[in-house]
Length: 293
Image (cartoon, rainbow, N blue to C red; front, side, top):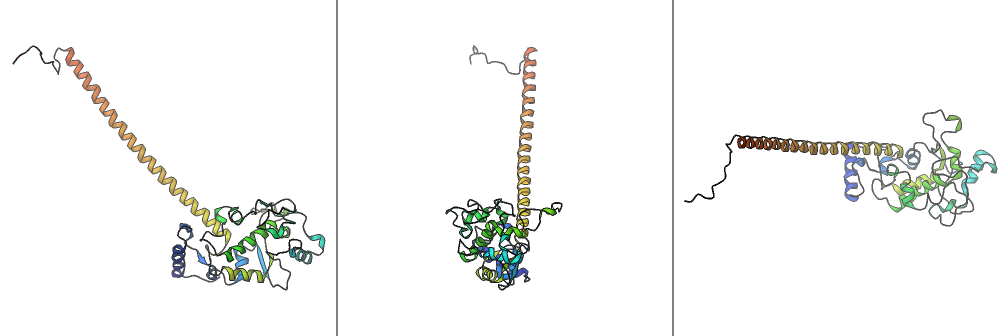
């Protein structure tokens, strides 16, 4: 990864903020162009998802994140070559998050991830639009947190999302299997070193070179930073709210004290007047209406 000077990062953040003033939030000061985060497409694919993918030469047995013939998934052939035999194409969806238990056809309404509609581990509702794919895992995992991306760049994120959600063979590269349930990091959703064709990753790098991404280019680290920042914001808002409530309470207490003091004065005054009346020496005497001047 290329090193970034403070001045370059500051300049990139300033330019980005000027370009997308509504899209930038305070925690994203690290937003930087892809070409200044990654050296090439290989680093992009391997770093962005923390070793979920391993880039291989096209001559090797590597998967693709996109294809066009819905009746012929080229990734099935790669699986056959890697694992030995046509019966190795999975009939279960080993990844589990929003995935189905087993791959099955989807209807014609599955248009965003259409290459997989004849045999998909995803439900069409999960992948029904670009926005749904971008938002499905929450704010921390949105790919456009540094502002709107170019259409060419965003399409590659859509392709990767479709591969992860829909590709049956992706589950063969699950990071943890059922013999590792005692591992504190065990989960059923994470990939590890799924081989991806270099040409695809190089094209992705070319398409996104001038777009912006967060932090050091690691989705998981960016999400962690997002969560940390949101927690800090929530803490500050709670402290400000508590301070405001304390001010209101202080004002209420002062008001009650003043009202109480006035009430005591009033009671004492009434008692004094009553006492003087009883002594035949009232403080206030009526004016004699019969007196003439």
